Image (tube, rainbow, N blue to C red; front, top):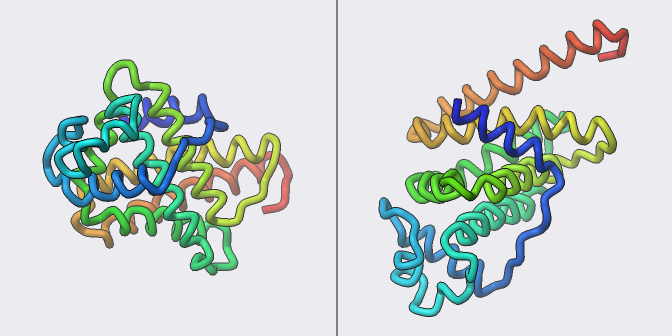
Length: 205
């Protein structure tokens, strides 16, 4: 249920505005991820782990911190995109998703708290933009260059896959092999649906 709500929110905002970033903000976010541990995200916690003036970098409050964290994870994934070598687009998508989850494996409680911040009442727009940016970044990292209707439908489909995999990882991510198997099943489901649709429409597949 939660995954469906997040996915619906993201697909309503498939071309979100960019997030402001700077070396100082990125450094504060990395210190937050390293130092927050099991504590809930708050501006007080940010100041404790990232410096007394760290709150000045995020005038929008803790929701801005959470949104900026997911944007940083997107940019880290894009920076590593040159390593996604498979000839198949679906395998590069898989590699991009697994890269970002593996990179965050040591900070899973922090990611859970960051997502919880964006799921609070009043933050629906920020949540939608964050998920949409991540979906766009995954397709970009995979080298997708689709446009028009295909661009939109691909992102809508991947939003469901990414959100369900993210939630599965948050709940059971201690075993990354299990996460990979879950992701592979979601990708296979989409592939089967696509082949069936193409067959019904008389398209090559």
